[in-house]
Image (cartoon, rainbow, N blue to C red):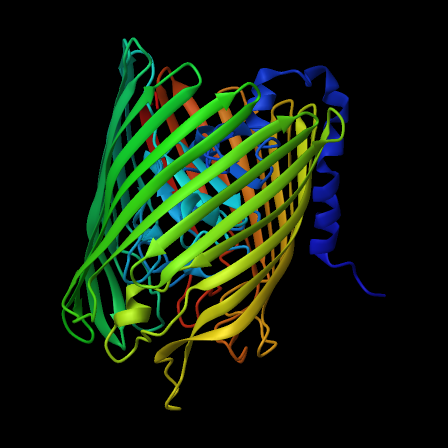
Length: 608
């Protein structure tokens, strides 16, 4: 007799999870439950909307969840969330890729408090250098957002938020460490006085690492990060604010069997001013700069890749009763300073955009349009339309259509002996149908989507030597998938679960797009027990292929993490996390081992 597949049984359990809270209907109007299970989202529509009002597939990881998990890397927070796939060349500061809804790692913009951070040469953010303890909120928006954020928002957008500061001056100090001779420390001070809010923080992480590639020794990593956020609201309602974040350190790796290391720095700096022009019209101007800098030693020699993006964004919001209009313009300039002689080392992009948020309850409509003019690859126009219907007090049905594009990177256009100056941008069309339910202290969200990508940029082997040496456009790719997210707050239990199926296919070859897992599951359970908290996470992912021909198959895996917290004295707490408790050996990139069993402990004093 055939045994039932464990993932199928768990899938049914996940789908039925909200039913476990039906007896909790007396808490249906709880403000705390509403904020946790139907949170406000900013990224999806450039304006605060609850998850069901956003008409998008969204995941919000709040401060409480981040504090419970106490992650050492931001990838631990994102892994196996609905529609999210993560690949790493080993842990602790090694190259990381985020694949959102099966799109490429260059197709998911990273925003920090509204400022975009990425490498203009590689086209991807340096996810591996972000210190998760300095953020208090993560928003993951799935589906195209090119009409709001411009190039590369094909699979969606991830935005990290820093604390604003509120109330009396509140210090917090945390120290800890654990496996692989890892040491961590962080300190912060936050608060508000009158109309001024402030948050300043610093962190330090050092780790000897582990043997990422068999036989090549442990590879260490260190990171020092500083953060400052300051804002002031004037009597007339005008607001002025500044953000500055800088991380720097060193990461070790092997390049063609030779020990190598990279000194890195990444920085985000911005200033904004927001002014109420009238009672219904607010105008906001943001000036920002993002830097990604790397100096590598060893391997094939010394190299420097420094990129800088300067952006000016002007955004206007007009409120007309229950309707809202947004219109604005954006100008960005990328600059590259490198030991590599690029054919071009700068490019400008100018854009205008508009959005309408219309409320004809129970019908809501969101429509947006953006036009980009880039000196490197020409003009692109993107748009989206989303419709939502409140079927009753519990269910909201949504349908959407959106277009997006991915801009070729500096490496793809200009890198000597590799680039292709004739590349066109990737363009995409996406369709989505979803339904969200909210019952008492439970929620569920089911989405079905399909994305068609034209002029997909892939690297090919032009001379038959086994190396991918030239980027080219291929005709098209098709990605389709299903996502189920569900959760419940039952008495002292906090339960969250996600189940994802993705079918990313190169339509020219019929092969699955490389590096993407087709199935993933995540289940988080936490319980409060007075001064104690206990919890755990199960993450399971199916197989993936490391090459375009699907010849190099990497097997699926499942991991178990456990965690415990104890508030042992007023203002004092300690946390213990056990990662990959069953010591599962697996790879998400061929040849690069993931960490085995690991334990970390920390002690904290003070508030946030």
